[in-house]
Image (cartoon, rainbow, N blue to C red):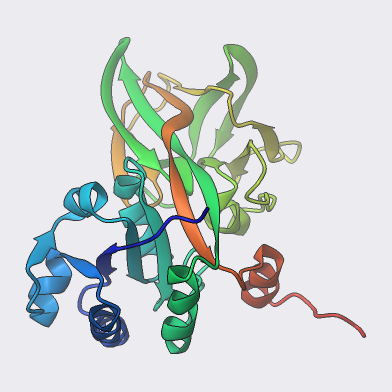
Length: 293
């Protein structure tokens, strides 16, 4: 039996005219449906909603049954890293560019949400990454990533040296601009632009994609998502490096540090309209050809 959604969290893209227009329409629509509405703090201050329930993302995760994120994939990623810690469904209204994670077109809000509230929807679990930086055996920093963790230099086109270990087995050492470790969700993001493979969301796998390696034999590799990927940064690197989580959160890395990347214990529960089709999304976003007949 499908879950009923009675308390709805509204999360938005700040200072964006199109997103604000959709948020106003959503607020009026949800009021008409008799739903309890929990509004993200930034949305409430931006649009001056007369909302009784104004909360941060943690509050929305604790109280709402469904969160509606209005914006682009970047907004969805930022919300997902927090909301994944709670048993809450998340659906996106696309007010960004590509919109791989935000299914609903602004013109279809009423139709698609009517179906979702009637129980006509699909649920999909997406796993996240847990990224940890160790220095002299001590944990220095950590964060979560929905799309990818990227070891890179702070400067553009700057080479580094590091080793890759998977489940304590040495894989290779490399001189390159860095390494992308991507989930299936992130395989259509930064990893794809770096020449990585597309992983369908149902795969329990990770893609390791070298960034401009200094050897022609270096190629992307796909490994079991339950593996622990350990990156050992060479002491020969003379400057500080970084690990980026979804391009939003940056963890500082020094020569000699180790980065461990593994599955996060939480998953993101995406709610899709019944019309959702992953391969249709790929065709639309990537400009693939349609049927011949």
